[in-house]
Image (cartoon, rainbow, N blue to C red; front, side, top):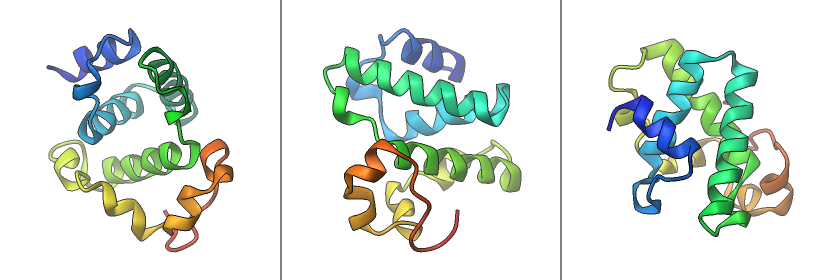
Length: 122
């Protein structure tokens, strides 16, 4: 599936849950950042994830800090390395642990609002 097809099925909430992987999240974030200003990419990612999760029966699945942290990581990766191979470079979801403690990410506050990293800056 192309990136445009992935974004379209994500936005229509027709993407099968089994296809909504970490890599798919990264590809959508990359596409948004490539086609929109940062604020618009963040809004689209946030709203899209909330809508997709609600349709897929996981309304509580959205996590603001994780979403915005990954968006920042993808944005930096695009700036430093470009899009080629970036998904492979960011494929390990545990990369976020470099920036955040588990305690911070498990907090309700981080789920509902942006919390800056408590380890290494993004």
